[in-house]
Length: 180
Image (cartoon, rainbow, N blue to C red; front, side):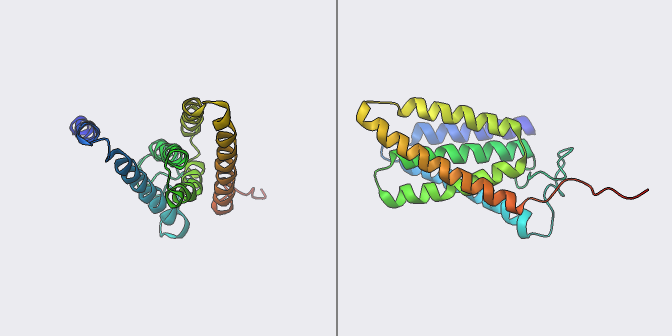
């Protein structure tokens, strides 16, 4: 059943990419970004204000304090958040419309707060490698380097704000010592 589900996901993604014309690809990317944002927002809302504490209803072993829902697996949730962050940053750098760029950058703290609360080293590694790839794609002529540097500084500032926000909501994982 898992293999069939994976093949269905891959076939759907391949069909969307192959059938999407050049004019509809930005809309497809925005749709993916919105879908990932909804999943991350649902996970954060459940973790922060929901009935279940972080990781309480997941089958992921050792994830009592890690954000794993709605993906069901903390590392899977981390990869979604890392992908969302990179997609938002890439669209913010590429889209010519200012409101879309602002909306993309506004999603970065949501994604990074989700990534932080998963406590996934693999997620952070995927994010770092993706960020390096994003920077490699955007290195261009000298006049664009200034724009890229300013944009990257803005993305980093928004990212730090997102992680700081997540730290304020995270619960301590240490158990207080009892006097014996």
